Image 1 (cartoon, one colour):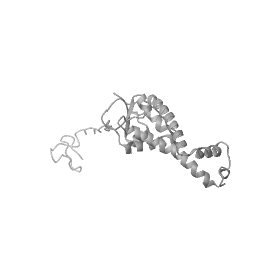
Image 2 (cartoon, one colour; image 1 turned 90 degrees about the vertical axis):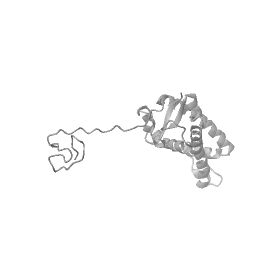
Image 3 (tube, helix red, strand yellow; image 1 turned 45 degrees about the vertical axis):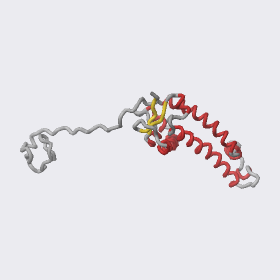
Image 4 (cartoon, helix red, strand yellow; image 1 turned 120 degrees about the vertical axis):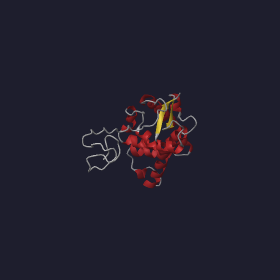
Amino acid sequence: MFCPKCGKETDASGKFCQWCGSDIASLPAKPVIVPEENEGPEVGVYAGLGRRFIAFIVDAILILLIGIVTITFFSMTNGIKYAYYLSVQRAPIADLTEAGTADAALGPIVAALGMLIIVIPWLYFAGFESSRSQATPGKVLMRIMVTDMEGNKPTFARVTLRHFGKFISALIIFIGFLMIGLTKKRQGLHDKIGSCLVLLED
């Protein structure tokens, strides 16, 4: 135990402090002070949910346009067509191709949807957010940018981790995104996963 008077560790079995001789039993114990958790320095003004949502809508439109051009350029339109007939028209997968097999249809579907849902959004967000502007076109429009926890330009790896963290934010019924409006530093779950902040431009 510690002596309430001198603060040094002393034998708990004794009545008096072995260092200062004070009566340990008669002295009131000093309250234990628990230091507050250090959340890091304030590095700017945090962007709220509204600005970030509008920026996301702008970026989603641009990603869709880029996706259409990319899918057309790489001749992946059959994959989108097969996915449409399979999910909307409920057509048997074996009837979608001339080969008449499921594998012949699944390959183009996986390639097209993988490009549209995973590859293009990843390169778009990670590329722009790790660039000199630290912002996608939608974020530039709303005058916000992505930084690390110290307010510096994030690395490509960091914003990649942040981007794929969005899938987790979405999977938990979008609670990860709603956290933006509830946390002190306006961080969504994906921001915390990537150790990033979204700040208003100076």
